[in-house]
Length: 207
Image (tube, rainbow, N blue to C red; front, side):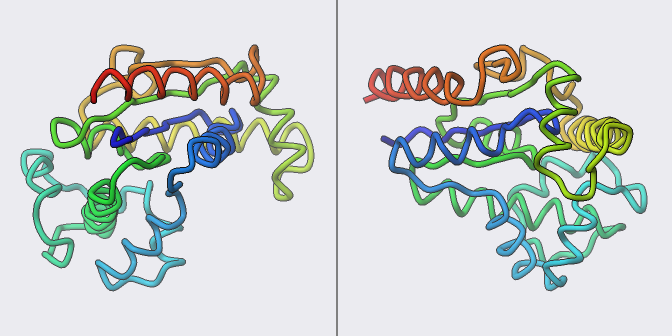
């Protein structure tokens, strides 16, 4: 199987867990924080710095050069830190994709790999109440509802802004993905099963 699965997700939707479980079920690699580690190596920043700043625009870079960032060395100089981080993460994503079938979470992977690799692009979403409940249960820094609600809003805002800035597309817009799936309604296990069957059917037709 050579198809790459990219997973974009609303914060608290369980998209990362779905991606990890799907990768385990398919027997293929799963990449999330590994992208941060490799990007840090590529751009020379500390891993913690990359993790803290990967979706925060500290300056203004020209979008006109954005498409070229995907194919050039992450070591090149850009006008702001996030531009360097984006380029380094894009390079890491491509290097993982060159290794064959895998699941890649977040970081505009659907855009980075577009027209370069055969991808099944997925967006995982859920209703606000389901996401807040999950965040309260899973994240220690959001142990009450008000904190969780703010974290959900802030994280989604950062992700939407980041995606729009680098792709000029709407984050979560159905036309940008092959599958959009509601984890709040269906549950984690059902989402994994649905995506597994979709992947097997799709990848089989490409051979």
